[in-house]
Length: 389
Image 1 (cartoon, helix red, strand yellow):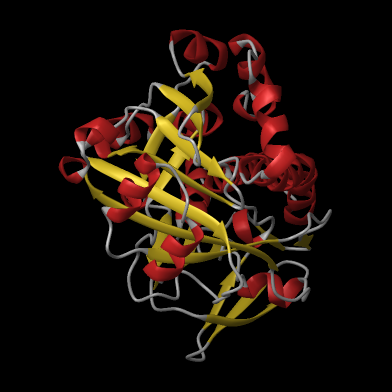
Image 2 (cartoon, one colour):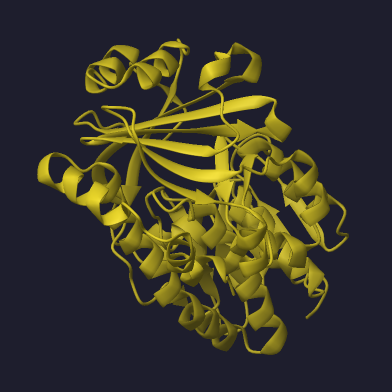
């Protein structure tokens, strides 16, 4: 490919940076553009399964990620109303041996910084901020992206990695706004020293209740404590990084056990995200334009695989482009390899949300279902995800 004809990547988040890095490692020239004034990641913690750690290894950033990650001891499900433990899956040596890589938790900003620095170290990658794409057109051998300032970016292909509100998706698919799920996420991070000692845990703990749950786990080598409170709400606001209403939060969590109530009370200021997804589609590539991550298959957070699917997308896309000299063919092959896996994550995430938020008889069924479930069987139930690609 001519060095002056890069692949254009729209979006400078985790998915976009992973894509630029994966493409650069196959020798491709990349021009990544971000509409924000500077690169950065909004959010709190991420849970990263072995499938994603495998991708970090292939991208050459595993050591850097390991330095800033935390490696929890268990995945624990507890009942938010009576405080009882429902199930515990050890993330021990047997888990690591089964899936070849560990389970980790990482601050989004830390991971984004690792990927950004790795991209900056690649001479084939050009990073540009303050650039908003307003229209895209393609010819048989080129793609032209027009900015709001009248600039025209030309490349051999274009990848929309611009999130759940993807402008590129609007251009190529035009299928409207993502689905309102009625789920709202409040997230916050505080120093571990501010958490009462008896409530600290080296595990990922999820407290499940009727139409709500709270999850917490350590971040940044155990220095930080990440909390996420999710509940069903009729207050819908577009986007993310808006301040949440603590009165509404405590109203929805009224009646929870003492441990959950105490933890919620430790934070005065929360950031709120309205949760949206889309029904899976079987096509998101058109000629020399394709979508990636949340732009292609936004999902709820209940399997903790949203960022992971974007990173897997990035590797698969770069691999297909390396194998096929014809861009539309490579994009079609990438899509074919990702549609079912990402669709399964989307649909199973919805199902896990129902499991976590069960009430009444469903809550009792959940407890009976998980009571006495062999660890080996529980571990294998995640193999379709954690075996990776």
